Amino acid sequence: MSTHRPFEDWILGEIPLSAQDSQALRLHVSKCVECRGLADGWDHARNRLTTAGMIGPSKGFAQRWSQRQATRLPAGRRGVWIMLAFYLSGSLIAAGLVAGQILAALNSPSLVLQSWIRELVHWSLWIRVGGDILEAMSRALPTESIAALWLALAAASSGLIVIWAASVGRILARGVQR
Amino acid sequence: MTKPIPEQESEWLRQARDGDSAAFARLVEAYQVPVFNLCYRMLGGADLAEEASQEVFLKAFRNLSAYDPRRPFRTWLLSIAAHHAIDGIRRRRLTTVSLEDLPAESVPGERSLGPEAALLEREKGEEVRAMLGQLGPRDRAAVILRYWYDLSYEEMADMLQTSVGSVKSRLHRARRLLAMQATPDRLPVGGGGGRRVDAPAV
Image 1 (cartoon, rainbow over the protein chains, first blue to last red):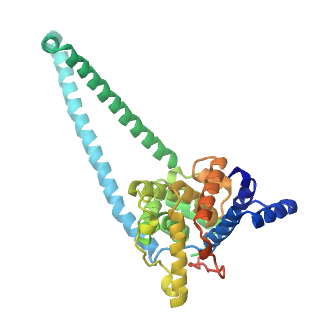
Image 2 (cartoon, rainbow over the protein chains, first blue to last red):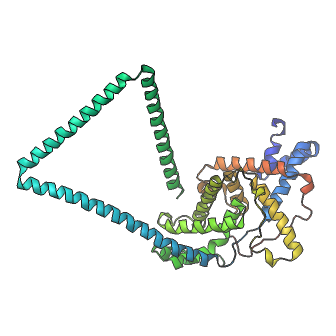
Image 3 (cartoon, rainbow over the protein chains, first blue to last red):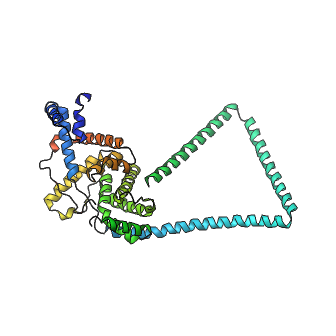
């Protein structure tokens, strides 16, 4: 198509041409079948686009919007109230647990310290047992299986990272649009 | 409804920002035609356009706090509509299911014409719908904003969140495709065709 330049750009560019360029374009179009087809095609398409006119909605559009808006608003508010109740109840439970610990610590600090240490030992034992089990399993498995397991873990992690990145991208894109 | 005067529009916007939905409904009344037309041209169906334009106004009302009063409200609204329609096309895969494949449906305002004029208008409308249906969502948006809203390249770039160069290249590509698809036997005889809606584009 390079032989049709700059005529193709002049036909489609919608830019005012000098008398000399207009003459050159007319001369080229009279000789070149492709450019004549392009010019005629674009004339037709532009005519359709510029004469198509605006299309409006059926009557009562604004009323329908008001009705829709009125039904959407309570649903939105209900969602906010549910979220608020959820967070409040969670915060109250957490505050109650913390308050119980603080009261117990004020009454008998040594007992609370002992119970914390006991809990710590308890959980560290469980972690150690879990570690031992995993170690025994890894010894029992053949080397190929371990490599495959690592590959599967790496693939799963990569997948999660891609999904996370895509989600962040979409959220950011929506934010920009607004 | 005709275009609101700037003071009136500012007042409605101020009231709507304070949560007055009745004030925003006046803006809906004023801008329903340009928003509906954009959605209609993008999506290719009156039902889809009704649903989309209703959602566009809801989105605009909800995000009114993000509107910068230094920018024209119309441009901001049309930007939301364009992005909403582009997202809608992508979701529904309307680019692969061509607009030409959608069933023809009556267009609001068609009944006010005589039978022959209505037929002619319908044929022209179908042709325009088929033409736009060949374009990708963003190229389609660029063509619609250019030929129905007479926006400058800068305004279009701002609305479509892209560069002026990208808008120009999109338009060039779209024009080329439309010109290539237009066959000589479909060339216009009279070249006329009135506006479907008396209301201005605002």
